Length: 115
Ligand SMILES: [Cu+2]
Image (cartoon, rainbow, N blue to C red; front, top):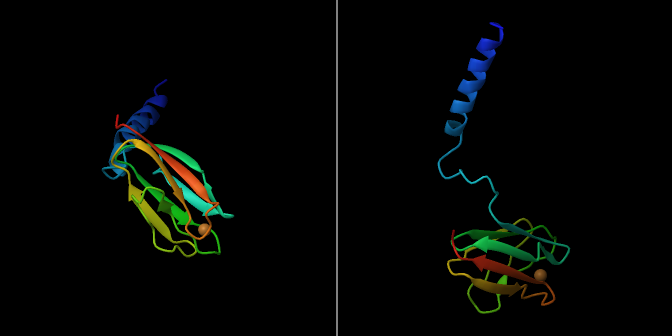
């Protein structure tokens, strides 16, 4: 089956070249942790991450929201539609947060020790 050989070589070359097409630091296949603010809720309302990871919140509502941690660790400015806020969690623990305008909007970040 001589005719298959060029194809196999091309496939092997493509596989070898594939990692080079990704910028350094993009090795993790998981998307960065993200919480959406929509319909006056944090989605998801609970998120588990590793210490050192950065969570971003993006407001998908027409209304202005904030992200404020219960223990004062972080506090976003007022986020308009499509605006984002991010925070890097350095220490393991359970972090609850609310929207200062809508106290019924609550969420939790669970930070596990780094791998
Ligand atoms: Cu709000």
